[in-house]
Length: 171
Image 1 (cartoon, rainbow, N blue to C red):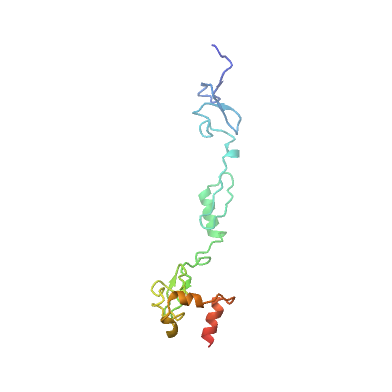
Image 2: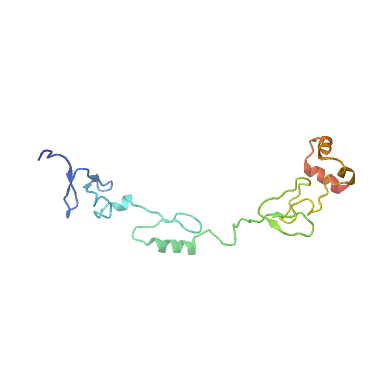
């Protein structure tokens, strides 16, 4: 033998293979070959210290402690029956929250479809100004003007569009 001190024998009693790159088990601190380095491969008596898995409730995502010797599925089932804080009818986020502003329309949309002229929120069918009878900028005097002259006349003011809209409805 040229290198008598090189490598170590596998600590598995049935193997004892000389391994030049042995792997040390982090639980029992013994050296093993590539076939027996896993906890299951060498039946590690200290595997419970390192190989700990905590089940999580599928409903409330809470970790559920499991004592040694208990079946995790049974413990999770008991948690779901007794201690689970999840209630199916509660905590549901509404998806369709944007209601159409057109009179008589009760549709709700997932996304806000605001009109660029009157700033109202409308459904897909009423999103265009002609579909919801948009009153903003459609007076008879302004229809004959071009868009550039209308844009030149409109001066930005410090009043929000909501305040302007409320003033129009009050008059």
